[in-house]
Image (tube, rainbow, N blue to C red):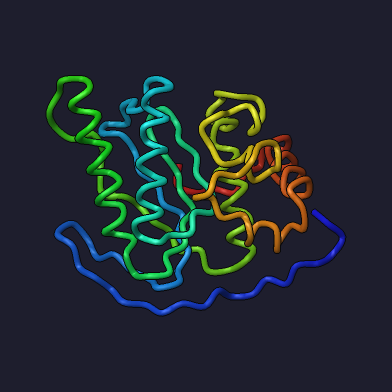
Length: 206
């Protein structure tokens, strides 16, 4: 990171709680969430370039429709991670659209029926700058922990390369908060790589 110390401030938000059939989910206007979704029985749900590309198109449309701020993503063979900010209290509705759209397309492509995803999405509220930074690092290093790649930059199906300044950021990726916290993409990349090399990654969902 840069030499300037970043103050760890609590993030501010408004809260409403909406019930669902399976559980109670907190909806926050202005909240930031680490969201995880896994394939049914931990089965692979992204098989090839086509699956990954289709999902990312659906993710972009969901972000735009629900006016989310997407800070990070990583799509793995049997699950995905998002770091998403919801200016409106609509995380549940957006995830319903995203998961439902992909599940219908997946079943149609492979001529199957039944559940594609294992459970309703899991979300963890990210309430401080420190938690936000560690979640960015955790998501970026998912392919490294899974031994799919040696470095976060080698995995093509995450936002890491764009956030680290290695490729242009797509319009639906929000990089402003990262820039404010780290100062530069190079400092962010050093932060991510240091944890990967130490193999001492902060535990998360996946």
